[in-house]
Length: 196
Image (cartoon, rainbow, N blue to C red; front, side, top):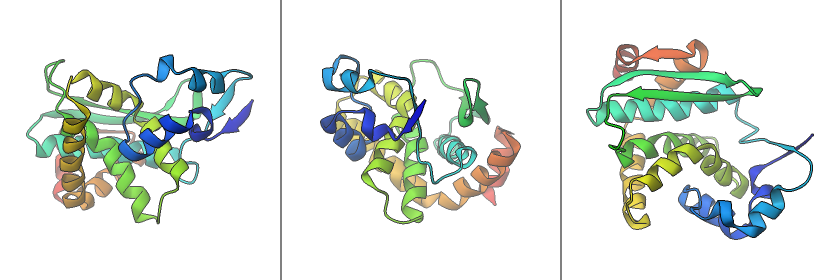
């Protein structure tokens, strides 16, 4: 099995959209060039290979958790764990107290926005890095699309998330550092770590 960056498996226009907006294209599944690039032998997609998988997942989930708490949303826990199909890949989840149809776009943006912020802290991200951020947050992007808001409003929510992530960056990095090692943090632990 070959290993490739996500940017090589997505058509150029969709890669540009992802890198610019961090939104997964709504027409990806029907895009012939994207589907054509997916054909052939199975390939492993390597997202942000220069960042340890546990740290990537922890930063993403810490962004969600800290920002949701700032927005007054109850956070039950945040967790990261190796993917069952690929132990070198780490996924995560934040359990929150919201109705299933209450998406809170700013909170959904907080995960990928935190990873985006981390990349900029390490230097200037490449085009492939930005595509990876959007691909890593595909589930968040799909939930953002379910909000039914036009892209202009979704991107305005991203701007608000960016401001909150910048304001709370110290809290997010503290939570992410502990979450990467612990694997699970309760809402109370997240609140205590975020407070410093």
